[in-house]
Length: 311
Image (cartoon, rainbow, N blue to C red; front, side):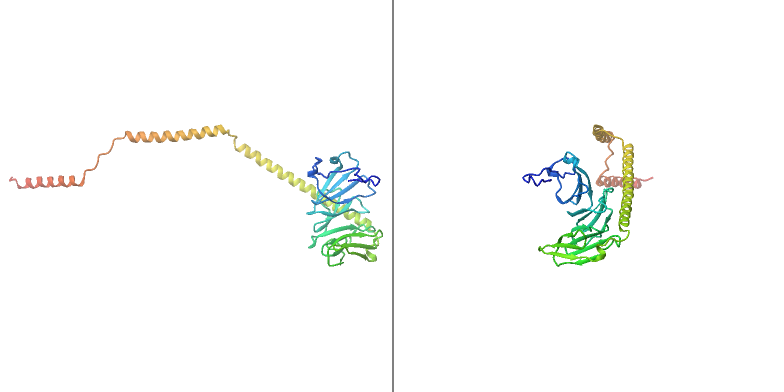
């Protein structure tokens, strides 16, 4: 929402953060952080609860047209969002367990990021005097100072400020002092060493070359991933076409009629078998064992009578 201090009864402008561009409030993402650079008066950025950064343009007429693009990379709410004061095309986000540096030219992923910390990150800010230095606070009460020209894997300095969680930080315009706010409402003012707020030789050129190199690297990776996805898609489509060619399209009625035909054929075959079996002559029954014994006795008596008669 945009407000005019001369009329605080209602906002002068409302933008619905619906990334589907349907301008429906139920689909809108919850805004957590806002970035507005005075040198870019028509542009602003919003960090959301869902870990998405929304880049907007005020010149557009409708809410859908004002949403230019989105950047996705965090697993939770984005609590800090700030453009680099020397290179506004690059911006810093802080959310979940990491801090990430982005480029407007690379929308698929961030160009640089910190390691995953054990404690949740709560806030972050760039140094106003050194383009390669930024600060982050964590839930364990630690303030980390990063200098990616010096090293990128670990912070250049990690300071335990208090035992409770730190929730916000602000850096003085000359970079000498840092104010940290804790969970219990305590504000701690810290003075940094001379080397952390003094611009180093060729630091601007070095930081610019690092940003450009990492952006170029991410673009190359994006192109390769896109090509791999296209290849996989074409392979899948080719397999589907082969299966369609191999398997003929059969109508459901044809399947039913074929099944009925097979069923009736089986029935007719069984009936024919039964009819054939009925037409065959029945085999003679075997004589009983008692009848066989009587016949044997008669034969023996006949043989004995023939032997007794004289020749």
